[in-house]
Image 1 (cartoon, rainbow, N blue to C red):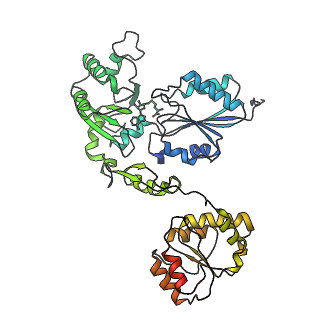
Image 2: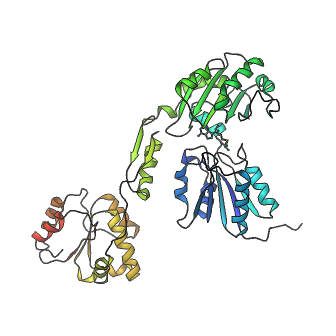
Amino acid sequence: MKRQTPAHKGVCYIVGAGPGDPGLLTLRGLECLKQADVILYDALCNPQLLSHAKSSARLVDVGKSGKTRSRQDQINHLLVKETSAGHTVCRLKGGDPYVFGRGGEEALALHQAGLNFQVVPGVTSAIAVPAYAGIPVTHRGKSVMFTVITGHEDPDKGNSDVDWSKVAQLEGTRVLLMGLSRLKLITESLIRYGAPKSMPVAVIESGTLGSQRTVTGTLSDITAKVAKAGLKPPAITVLGEVVTLRQELNWFEKSPLFGRRVVVTRTRAQASQVTHYLQRLGAEVIELPTIKIVPPQHPEKLRESIMNIQSFDWLVLTSPNAAEIFLRDFMLIHGDIRKLNGVKIAAVGTATGAKLKEFHLPVDLKPREFSALKLSEIFKAKNIKGKKILLPRSAIAQDLLPKELKKLGAVC
Ligand code: SAH
């Protein structure tokens, strides 16, 4: 049988971004994100995931929340347009693309336009959010099935697609998505249709994130408790016996930094590692870069020094940024790291040393802590009288170190 492949070279990956915790993106999802020329993402996708995009990628926010609502047909149109232009498109969607994500409609639009697409399933919030709140959706002896239901439909509306009388009679766990604003109507109609008032219920806001909040109660009192706590969307409602397991299985909310909000002020590019560690400890992290590393305003001096690198005895690097910028320019000018041969290297701090290691450069001198006085003390023992030292560093660095080195007779 002959395989039918669309003629276009463009492809659209419809990727599940997971429920919020950036660690819950799949490996295949990450691969697609990294390859994409264009990324169309939703409001529910964690923006941190976009840091995996290549620097030339175009990032398009098609979030349907807020004032600038992108309509679904506009999104479909955009997907078709970008893919047929030959781009590698990543359509990044919260949770799993096919669980109340309208991913099916997007795939159909691409199929109807004769375009290539692939679906990368994601970790759906319907399962992951209860898990992070200490609730397994099935459990022997408590629940042998679970049903995921949209709470988007008004239960009092005659033509609702969801038959709430049937939902009330269901066995096992019920997971409601998108139903927070209708919680009162939904719980009332479930009770009206015969569900026990004492049924355990949990409502979880911003699940899997450091900002996660959980309220538990019963079918009869949950609405009041949720209103009192002021929970906001996105939130999930879990109904059933499994909710009681939270008393023992609530692991995430017991993480050491859970409930703490931490501001990371490093530059955007350097924050991710710190952010990652803090998030693993349960913190809610806000990245607020207070500094920005920019190339030198007067690059001539640095370039000239690099051209004449062989005239220096020492290269002193006091930060990973200085190392990065120096080595980048060095490679642009010389294209050969061996041109550094004969120049001794001092690197202050482990991060600076690690940066040099990326270039396979051994370091001759590596003081762990940075203080101009300490560094000059170490250099004193090296007898640097008359030696030429190159010190590429930030334009706003203090004068102390070059002064101290000059005192020792060096040309800095
Ligand atoms: N495709 C998504 C669901 C999209 S519908 C998935 O598989 O997860 C959007 C609804 O998902 C929200 O209204 C909310 O009910 C739920 N949701 C998504 N992420 C959530 C989160 N981090 N915490 C709580 N609820 C979430």
